[in-house]
Length: 457
Image 1 (cartoon, rainbow, N blue to C red):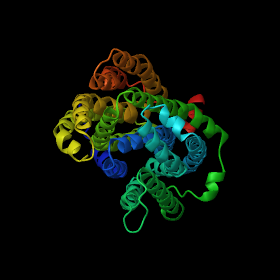
Image 2 (image 1 turned 90 degrees about the horizontal axis):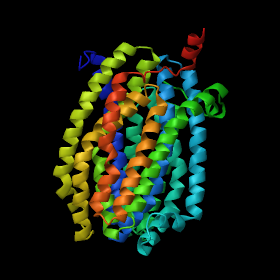
Image 3 (image 1 turned 180 degrees about the horizontal axis):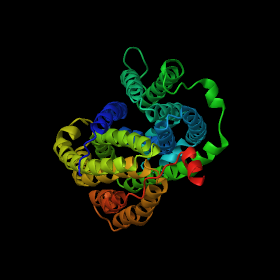
Image 4 (image 1 turned 90 degrees about the vertical axis):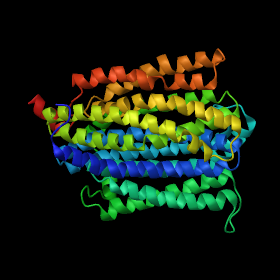
């Protein structure tokens, strides 16, 4: 049976995917607003903010690993309706998130120029990137706390609050961007520093709203401040055991992204600008995919946690077909939006616009693979309990295929778009691994502690 007849699956998938997709769209809009408004300042400013944003990308990946650990473990306990264990898991995740945010903030504040210099040698890009990074780093701690709390709510099937929080952040960020970048309404004209300050204030606002919701409004998890002071040794061991491969996989992927930026950063500012433009459209194109993927992960964790393995197989067949179809649609949309999207960046040079078009052509092809293997490996394999497989798979492809091929191509003097294609080649190649792994169904593993105790008895 290719498509499951369980209508509750489709209802749950849509109910969870829509608010998550909208949240991702709004989060994208916050980043896009920075890029678009800073784009009016020229190539160097766009490139500087893009390079400064690479640390945010690293943080998102590391924080996303912690979120993934919360979601995967908590969703399985939610299948048993064990909210006490979920509260302990959230507390453990928050502790890790806070430490991560504080460490990265300190490093970026003290060594902003050194960090940006790792990605590019262009002095004007380094100057703008360092100015941006020195301020925006104060948003990292707030971002980590907010994302951990949003993951906690998603694990118990409350997805709308993330969308609301992101919408508030968008309004704050865009409004302050307009005032602080260009100096409107009596505010000083601060350029890229203004964009960074707007991001910091919007992140603080996000955290305040999220903390208020969790502490005062939510009645499903009922997480109280005192719950964050307690932990559980056994659950902490589980969090580390199952969370480290998730965090490790995300760190590998963030290293890949930063190394990719460093490789492309050895080209001129036009190529760096083109990378920013192409990757921004790339993020927009995957809003729907990410929403359905997150929703699928919650459903998978809940279903496996409840021990409904036969039903999970039905869901797996259905989602593989859905994501493959979504890949073809996404690739077509990326190709068709190429011209109009590049046209939004009125301040970039003709050379940057031409390279952007080449990069986007590559993305329109790799999108097919991305939309199949990324969400199924996360939403099925990883969320189903086989947390180590994706980490191993990503590590092999990143360090043995993607980065070596791109480095070789760049040293041989290949055009920028060829190097870019090397950096994206794994999106297609991983599909062959994914289809075998998913349909073996050896990834369905119940990670809840009660289940393991029952198995021992």
